[in-house]
Length: 324
Picture 1 (cartoon, rainbow, N blue to C red):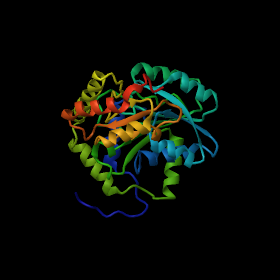
Picture 2 (cartoon, one colour):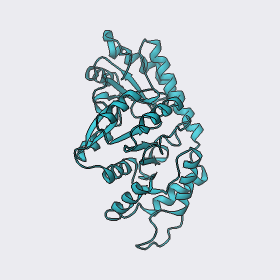
Picture 3 (tube, one colour):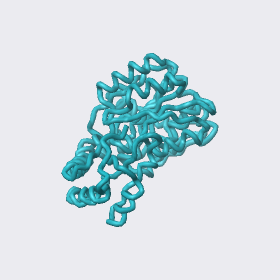
Picture 4 (cartoon, one colour):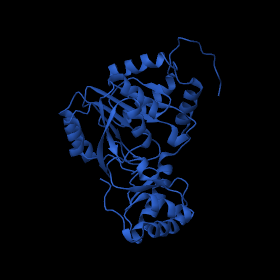
């Protein structure tokens, strides 16, 4: 890959990356908009929230949800309002209550939700759009970090509210060291993000941008094959857990969420048995307890042993039936 000389004042986005990103967004039905490049999904979400909100404003977030986002919102001086989640995404009634109660922004994970694996279905997307249409002043932020690792169709919500942003990162599909996300949205949001970015890092390394563009152009990752591998691992584990009477969730992505009566003992017993899982407290506010099992490094032949260990760790308390 040729490293060309770049000077201050040149365009911050590589044209080929913008073209490829916009083509992918168009194919998935994301409304038209320019492309901005940030240093990963969390950087994009932070910049979008700060472009519109002020300290004390409330942000509706998924519960359980991405731990880094749950940390970011209060770090920005904002308040979190939990919204329940099932396998099809955020619960419309919870979203309605949050927005009616004054939440100024809503963050939704479209697919491969962390930690539950939820993916917004077509029906749920329609319900959420109906809720958002009654609150057009809401700042909508969609996180599609599962791009290129899931095979479920995207059902975007963008375009219902006046201000919106749609974020896609490269980290999950191509490695966490490629700190890059593409962001599109309404003109006001993008202009504010670009303006503030100029006062900080200025731009994301064009070397990284060209690397991602090349990976996309050359098809370095086969999304269908990756999604199928993750799918087999999730489904094998979920089926093995069901054989022991343990309910689990994970319709997309690389995680399986297992509701448990209590987390500390389950995590400790599994660790003693040689298995490391993440306690649900890292990902939840009001939601019931659970543990997150990441299947990215799990071999299918190990699923049976892990399921037995989980069932033994849960013990006589038995699993909870829902994570809402």
